[in-house]
Figure (cartoon, rainbow, N blue to C red):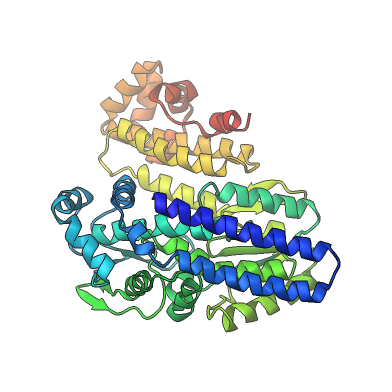
Length: 471
């Protein structure tokens, strides 16, 4: 890793010196045209110098320190096994006696990645998303490549790119979107790339990589990773385009591909935010937005060789578009997209399904994990009244679940009586012929399982925690 740091440091000094020389020439006012031409030649030489510094990048990648750090990161991620069924622990044991053999195959260019295990997961808006799970060995190698290449590309990525980058996140992208809307850019050009990860052009991506990386063994390895097949249903198919979602290297490669779009938008002076393949451009009126949509679509499809989803892409007011699960309202305030609340309720229904056969404590634990993560992400939305309604609905679901656990009438009566409900009133509920949902909404049941009772059970309260997080 010391060698990697030296490479990045040398590059920075080299570029910095070029910029200083160019600025002194331009500021002198003498022969501006000639100075500009000399600057262009120096920048081109800088690119060659950077490539020369990456000629031995595979040795940096295969260093013991880098490979060990990569394995530890893969182990922390707790991913499942690939097509070979080898777990992270089993790979760790194997690596101890085979590290020399593995590193030699990487350095000589003879290493052959295994096909990824294909898995389809449902998308929130319908349809299926294709994931590719590489073997643990391949994940460690890809993580090692990522650790070496990421510092080289990070300093060149756009300030408007927030996805899959260190010290950058979705909340920062949303804050920038708020700023744009607050400035009066209330119309959004919402560009949706159709199956982006499945459509990345391999030849164009390899050309982009070769502009910065001179190590031919590394370039060959990345090409093999891109073209490794996908195993699904017992059959392996060759991949001729795309970067498989689920691999450690895929996020960096996708940012390298879309950085070209970022640079084009910056060159045109647009205000935008991009998180992975989710890109919103902020303009002042619909006419400008339609013009931007048309020109950028041409650039994406003709230059980047990607496909814009015409059905999902649109030009509309900011509060009618969603960005990373949020909506940006006039004035810059954030709200939550309605479909995100619907998705949460679907997950809650699944956890509190009355025939699961889980203890009430397990149900509470599962809910708390879901609600904590959900609120931590959406805490910046203005939604206190929505959360109060959600809390009430969740308690209703849980009362229903707990009543059904009592099974018989005598069980319901004893349970309610133990919580302070009068005996005759408990019998009214126990002997009622109403369904579980209606019974759980009765006054006696709400009296027994009130807010204080749920607090004692340890239920995560969305409204109370929302107030804490925002103050």
